[in-house]
Length: 271
Image (cartoon, rainbow, N blue to C red; front, side, top):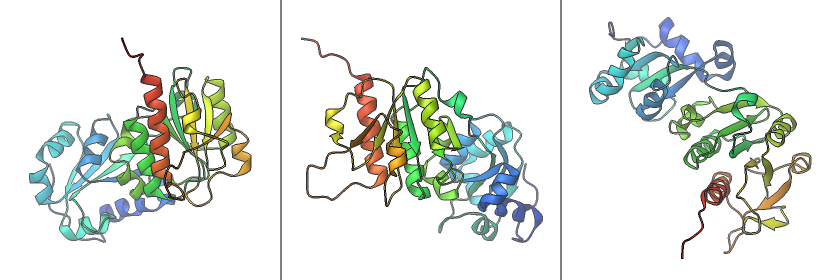
């Protein structure tokens, strides 16, 4: 049960949680913040991930089932004032629930195996909102893992966690691996490695996606560099049927991942 309400934004407990908005402290403490009922609910579904829960009085009432789940898991609950929650939250309008969570990422060797059918790789992706959206899309498409390579954004960035809408807690996420090592592991596990890039000579319509596939997605502004394109088995572009110059990263990733998911799940039509 929560004790007295936390009202001082300079209290040691609040300051310890607040510092997790900085990557250096996240890496040091191996902890991050998950904000909002959706993220907190999904984090609580994994044993031992949530170590503390902050909640306003209103949120305790509105999300009583989440608070009860935290209590059942033995997670300390801190009742926080609106001012404290505003200090901890990284949104304009905080939702009143915020959890301190342990890192959940997985080693590359356990996340990518011979059983993997669909993997998304983020190479030099810097925008946390885009990265979180790709993670959410990969989860929805039934991907087996998402890899954040060493030059990409931190998946525990607050905006990335929020954009993933809980998907960070649903599938293996790998962080900090070099692209070359990642591709080597993918190929050794039997996946065909496709680079999604406008430089592709073939389009998504021309490629057989029925087999195990890994997609590499590049930077929002400049795509994938030549050295990464050279590592892929093939460079594929999303066809543009109308007058748009291109698709943004998250949209292109959704098109590619779902194209693979549909091809892998396709069944011959009877009759």
